[in-house]
Length: 388
Ligand SMILES: Cc1cc2nc3c(=O)[nH]c(=O)nc-3n(C[C@H](O)[C@H](O)[C@H](O)COP(=O)(O)OP(=O)(O)OC[C@H]3O[C@@H](n4cnc5c(N)ncnc54)[C@H](O)[C@@H]3O)c2cc1C
Image (cartoon, rainbow, N blue to C red; front, side, top):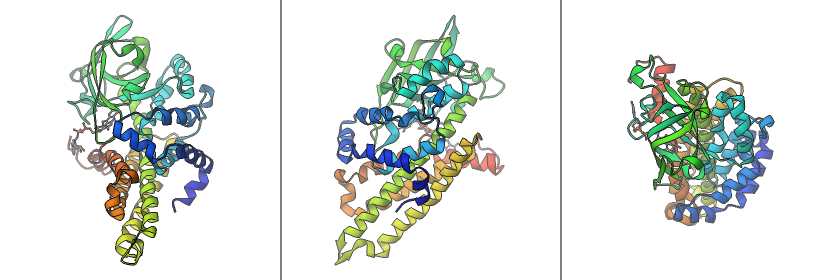
């Protein structure tokens, strides 16, 4: 079962990930989940085997592979029942530094990010009052000598407590003073080791899934102006390319989740006998599994297309959005199907179905919610009037 053409293309990567993930079985994740603990051992294993640096060019110590290879890594992590959410940002957040940082910044940070010595796991965009309307962020960085002084608040910033660096989106010019709402936004690289306790406070948020997400409070945090990425005021553009990579990679995690659910449901439906025959002999049980397979295969084709465009140097905003939407819907359908196929056992922690069910629900909301994707397609692709 699965997607044979993908298995062939990246079989070495998939095999390596399967071997690694076998060391982190369901019991490991169940224990973390109960304690809401960060999977440090899993992330360390991924980093030390080089899986988190596949997108970093060889000259900076990474393997210099494309996004398509990275999607194979994350898909297989999720298909194996593990979760890449604790580590995936180490793969793509550095893209902002790689594409828009100075030579000095790249030389200073990328080799250490590639080796895992520096964890760049945090990406600070969302704020409590602006929500998805990113141009209305209020966190402000005011230039003062050789520093920026940052004040404001962020919410849902995942892995902030487990990261040495954070890519932070701030306003450097008030929105009202800019020609366009997307102007006047800048990107700062914050050294969390220096910031925490010196103007940055991190408060964990307990959520439905174990995601190490937090709230951040900035109170006169000083960030060296040397940590500005690219030009002041142009930051919105810089993060868009990173967001496309993020959406495609998250979509591949959804495909992995969907295949996990399909694998588990197929196996269970063959094995479980009720009324004297396997439940999977009933078309009422078979068809939802088959439908999940069809939807997942179609969504995976869209993820492959978006990744191929990204690797060809195009910024596939529309394709990345469509891939994320289709994949997150396929994984959610598969999750629901898998619970139903397992009957009562779908709710038992030891089966991992309920945990994956909770985990995969996130992807229709974060990193971008379905309505915002539909709005993008409606207005940018189909030319319908803008609603906001
Ligand atoms: C576990 C978790 C981890 C996260 N990690 C990070 C992180 O590391 N870094 C980070 O920056 N952010 C992170 N986020 C934030 C995430 O990206 C946002 O939650 C998401 O983009 C949605 O924004 P919001 O929650 O502000 O929803 P809102 O913008 O308030 O929207 C709420 C609902 O209304 C809908 N909606 C809003 N406006 C419209 C409209 N005009 N038309 C139609 N529908 C509309 C949305 O689709 C959504 O369903 C995380 C979130 C979660 C839950």
